[in-house]
Image (cartoon, rainbow, N blue to C red; front, side, top):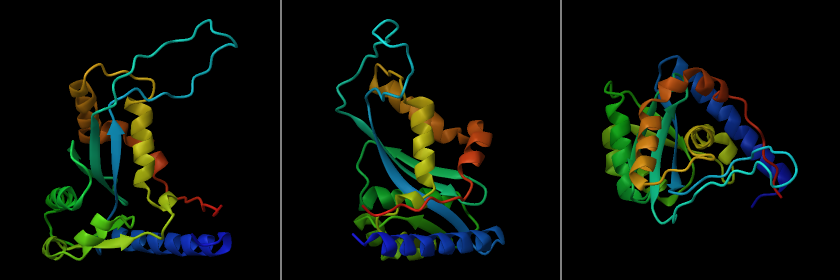
Length: 208
């Protein structure tokens, strides 16, 4: 892992490049999206809750086995916050990544180039070098290593956890699945909140 100064310089360069791409995307030169998968285990997510000191008033939440999980491969547009996703019980791999990118392409039928800002996962590099990427006119922009703070979709995953998962018990996997599908399909319901969290202000992480 690079040292603190080198890491900060690399991240700063990444921010400059992302903001430049955003300006060009706003001008209509291409579509720009942030992409990343997230894995959600069917279990209760505990959030911070305040209560008076002591056990009085403590609420007990049920939990599940945590043996089943949902994978969401998502893309959010850096300009208009349009969201595209593949929700599956499978892992994020070369095959599911290809399907997710095909879904993304269907959302933009003008066939204008789509630039996807993403991390350096092996399946991302595999897709980037594939004939499918060329066929779909999708170009990757790989973030610097150890820079999850530069991928704005991470803010969406945190927001989703807050809205439908924290301190919420889903007794069956089907209810858990439906909650995730509903969130992904109705992101416009949270339009103002999403706009607020997607302001392009980036925090530089320090190497430790």
